[in-house]
Every structure is written in C-alpha cells, then in structure tokens.
Length: 505
Ligand code: ZN
Image (cartoon, rainbow, N blue to C red; front, side):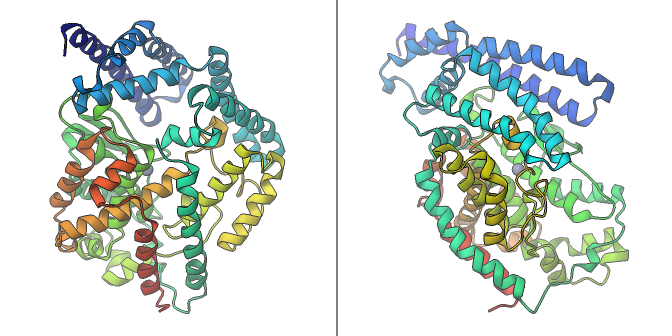
C-alpha cells in the first residue's frame, strides 16, 4: 500500500468509526425509549432522535467520505486484505444507498413512513383496509423509484429484498418457497386431522413474574450471554438492541398466565444477543465486524429458540428446574409432555403468534403478494380478498376481518417490503447450520441434555459471529455447510419432528 492509499484508508476508518459510534448512541436512545423513558418525554425524545439522525445522515453523505472512497476504488484491489476490502465495499454500498436517492424522495419516504404508521394503526383498529390502501399504493410507487436509483441493475422487488438479505433474489427464493409449500401444506393438514393431540392444559395457570424472570435470566446465562456486557429488561415488544458488542440490551415481556411466551422470547433474544457479543474483537466500530443480514441474524435467534430450546434434550435438562420453579402446575409433568406441549401446531390468523410449522406459510403468502405488487400482477385493492383466499388455501383458516388479515403487520406502513422472506430464510439457515454442527460435534444432543452449551456457543462464535460481514450469506452458508441453502434440511426436520409428536406415521 502506498502512503497515499494508507492515508485514505485510515481516513476512511476514522470516518466509519465516527458514524458507527453515533449509531451506537442512537441505539441506546431507542432502547431507553422502549424500556425506561417516562411517557412525558416522548416529544422531546423524538426531536433528539431526529437531530441525531440528521448528524448521522450528514456524516454518511459527506462528500469527503465520497472522495476517500473514490480514491480507494482506483487502487488495485489486491492492495487490501479481506478485512480492509470488506470495510471499503460495505462503506461504498452504504454511501451509494445514502447518496444516490434524490433528497426529495428521501424526505417523502420519511414523511410517509411516520404518517403511514398512524394511518395503518387507525385502519387496523377500525378494520378498514380502504383507509390504508392509498398510503400503501404510494409507498409501492416510491419503493419502485427508490430501487431504480439505488440498484438500477435489479428488478424493483429484488432491490427491496437486497436491502435486508443482500444477494438474495426472487429467482433464488421462489423455488425454495414452492418446495416448502408443497411439503408443509399436507403436513399441517395431517397434523390437524391427527387423532392424537398433545395436552397443553398444564401451561395454563398462574406463573409469578419474579420466578419467570429468574428462570429466564438463568437460562440466558447458561446459554452464554455475558451480563457484564449486556442487560435483560422488559419492553412491550421483545427486542435485542444496545450500542455496542460490549453493551447488548435484550428485552422480554411477562404475563403471569403464560411462562412459555416470555421464556422463549428470552431464548430468542439471547440468540440475537450472542451474535452481537460474539462479533470479532478487531474493528468493532467498523462495518466488517457487523452482523451480516436480517436472515442470518434471525438464524441465530431461531437456532437457540427452535433447534436448542424446542429440542427434547433441552426439556430433559430443564425439567427439574421448571418443576421446582412452578411446582403447582408442573410437578407431575413429564419431559415428553413438556416437549410436546411446547411444540404444538395451531394454524391461526396472526403471523407473530404462529408456531414453527405454520410460520413459513405466513411468510410465503406475504412474499407472493409483495412480488405481485411489484410486478403489477396484484393491485392494492385486491389485497384483502387475495390474502384471505391464500390463508384458506395454505392454512385452512379464513380471517374474519382485515385486522386479523391483511392489516396485521406493521412492515408495509413503514415501506419495509422484502423483509418477510428473511424470517423463513433464517429458520432454514438455522436448521442447516444445526445439521452441520451435529456432524462436527456428534455430542451436541448430549451437551444440550447436560446444559453444557459452551461448545455450541463456541461453534457459532467461530463459524458465524466472528465472521462479521466478510462473506455474503450465500458464501457463508456454502462455507459452513458445504452446500447452498437447501430447503430439504428444514422440511425433513419438520416432517420427522411433527409426525412423531402427532403420531401420524
Ligand atoms: Zn428475531
């Protein structure tokens, strides 16, 4: 590297670290707002966040940053190692995203996003899709224009998917989702019709919140969450946030009538938290160390929630603890009864309440609808009817209202199209990673039964968390598992598991 290039690179590093630290402040403000801020501070906080967003935007679009990047792009790529090349590549991608869009469009999207949220919330409350339809229409137009500015080589929907799951396209997702659909629809049907239905009655009762909290913290700690570099608190919707890998904030929520919901939210968010805490030790304020994509992040939360937490071996380990924590309800419950009760399948209207077997169909429905909205084969006014028909075809249930149907998700009100596929990609990645782990660590199930999670966490740290953004999701999956994303891992896992639980073989 020549001195000039060295200077330009270190200049880039300084600028990127600054932007990342300001982003960390923003995350901490958001956490505070969701967890402890007094409600009276809402207006002043909104202004503070908007002022800080302005500063971050200014830094991210600073022409000096652009000059720095263009100087580095003239250099022979072999002058940089993988770490440096990744920082340059990621910075260029973000800079292009921030600067290629006309300011008028940025403003309209921001304005529509915040107004859209209120319009959607009201329409959902009033069960009146037609009130939200014009906003949705405008957002799709805007997102098409946005796509043409930022990713002119991609189709509009692919550009939106790329925003959340880079390098992933409809051409890749569609056949995978088709194969999931053809396997899952009959499987769900047979589970619904099965004579044997697991008993879940012991999960109803009163479960003191302080005991739930202690149990959640113990399991999170057992999984390897470092409480000296993170916290666990309460919020309306569970999330994982925080300003830095050394300051990871996870949340859950409690209802004293249900301990499973809260516990599995803790396991899920701890999975996200371990990804953040396990980032590479070098360059933690640089793009290279950042978690890869939405789908890969979700693969880590779902890995712990489903592959580990909903595993029978996990019930073996925690049965005694759970009995001791909630003796009134759980004293006489067997390991198998607990395992079956936390793995029941109930086709329902709402995606966020769906179990692991029906969840993918909620996502596939949304993927198909979004794709149609972007290629023009679906119109906004057709949506409620189309939504309900698909629900009835895929899950055998028909939402009685739009509130329980097309209006249920917040995503479209903020213009987040192409986000939904990440959930199911994450579930499939998690399953494929788990199969590779079991080959490389043949004692995985024994480790879970013994509550010995360190080898599992270390494997994830090495293979995924510490790899940051060095590879694309496709490269990472290939590198770890020796093959591209293969839906057969996921469908085989679901078929084996649910046929056994429902005794339908
Ligand atoms: Zn998640």
